[in-house]
Image (cartoon, rainbow, N blue to C red; front, side, top):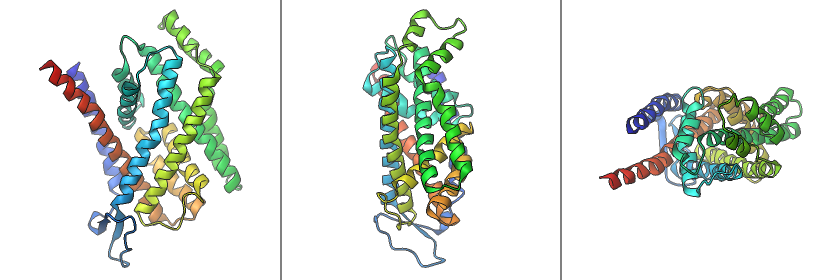
Length: 324
């Protein structure tokens, strides 16, 4: 098992390398200048681009904070399904599992999360199903919020509006309790025990409502993270409180579109959607929009790697120390 865990980490690292390379290619590193000030002075034209390290840290911090409601909701789902999930182990599995999305097929997210949280208190099959339920709820809420903003702010963008509704339907229908029960029973195929199926049948509308509240909070904080990315690349003319719906729609629709593309990490799809949405919602030129999109991807990935190092290796080293 230790060898398998090391191989999984190496596999994830291999695919993360591709994401890093894709994000970094948008930057002219020789022309970049960094400042710790939250209000860096703009560089003269032709002398490079100034990035604020202060706002880059804020971007990564708000991203990790934004994931917290989803991690708490996943624990709520597990407990609603009769699993005795502890807070610390659930959040550790949740944050570490995010690196699995960079591996093709999306299955690595489920493998990482269930592998880290399974125990005599938590059924592996129930844990795996709960990962899908939490993720689909997040995507359904994001698509719904984006559709509402697009309908109000971009009345002529019928493709974006209907696309958002279609994304919401694809992600949201399986989370409705009657549909969820039908799906789990249809996929049972004799593999799930009766006790496990009874646990899955316990999910109700109260849990779903709590999920929509949690994920709304998540997307608002993700919108704040996008705003900090704006500030980091020197786009300062948009106040967050005045443009919460626009930031929310841009980041939600881009992330949901990238997820449903089934491309690892939504690479390329999420970035292209975000650049297009920044143009439509903010009339932001292509150059700063591309920089903000690339920086957002890079900072989010670095934040995921840092929290992974803190939560995974710290626990791993502690367990190795006990064995020695």
